[in-house]
Image (cartoon, rainbow, N blue to C red):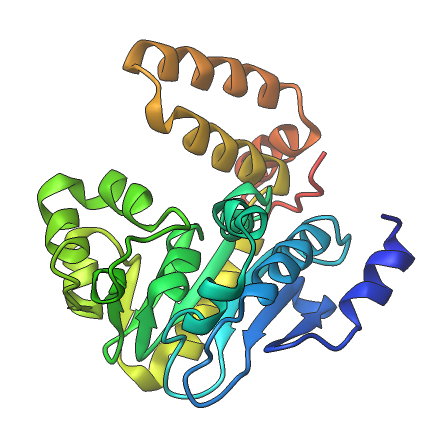
Length: 267
């Protein structure tokens, strides 16, 4: 998709969410906006995937933020939609929800209030989870005679281990933002009235770094999730070697010695 086509697509009206682009701060926001609980419809997931892909290809965007209007991030999916969806549609749920992880650019999610079901699964696919103290994370599918179907239990187990994952999935237990920070799910946990400021601060922090080094680090870390240590070290060495020939690395070294701020261009 060309840049004009991408911009036209992102200027569209979307069901259940909206897209905001701040080119001056190289930031794009995907804002869940179906109050009061921001329920995520089945059809919405595929369009969300398309939006993440479009923002990843957008020249004016360095950092993507997923957030929501109101006191709750999302209470989860449209329950009735599960019974109405075709098997083919359901088979694509995990792929669509994994879109933030596939983005080359860093993706931040700002959570507050209920962050349940697919809302939690989308958050787990992001790179940085900023939680308000009001946040309640849960995978409550056992209450429906089901299990998480979009990567929730799998991603969670990688982060917190088998015992805590069974506690959350098999008992449908909720945990707070503070507990999520303690367990390694949340990157930060802040007072509710500081969530937006914490998000802005992280966006500006990430913008300081080389886009090329950020893309490389994200892909390397994601790809090495299941690799043996020896393979992970080997891959890190290859990526390090490639970055040594980049203009951004030269700029970083020269700026360091000149005691000035580096200006990275992603090259």
